[in-house]
Amino acid sequence: MKNKLILIALFTVTFSLAQENTKAHQITSELSKVMNLSDEESAQFLNLNIDRFSKRKELEKQYGNDKEGYKEEIKFVEKEYNKKLRKLVGEEKFKLLIEHRKKNKL
Image (tube, rainbow, N blue to C red; front, side):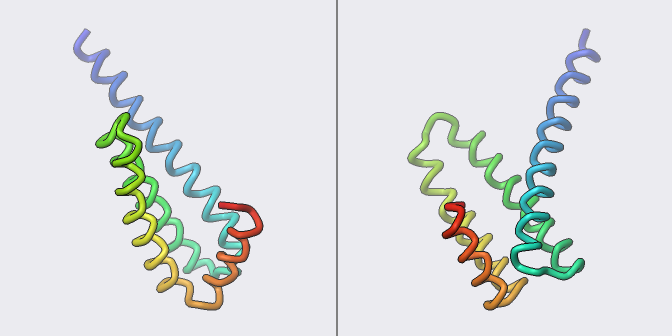
């Protein structure tokens, strides 16, 4: 019985990570095209997105039903993400992303 519980817990964690990675891959693919990223830049961008979603997931667990606390903390994660992304892709490509976000309200 104990082994079954461990397997279920392991499966749940693996499935959750797979969902995060799938979303990170989708966003990376779409926005890499928007910003005209090279393969190397896209790979680094993917790692940045995986890290971003991981941090968001941790904050969701940490804050639970405290939506205001979560909103305050997520601002720091998003600010850090945008700073790293701007450094990775440069100002011109980042402007393409900003235009895309405005059009699509991302």
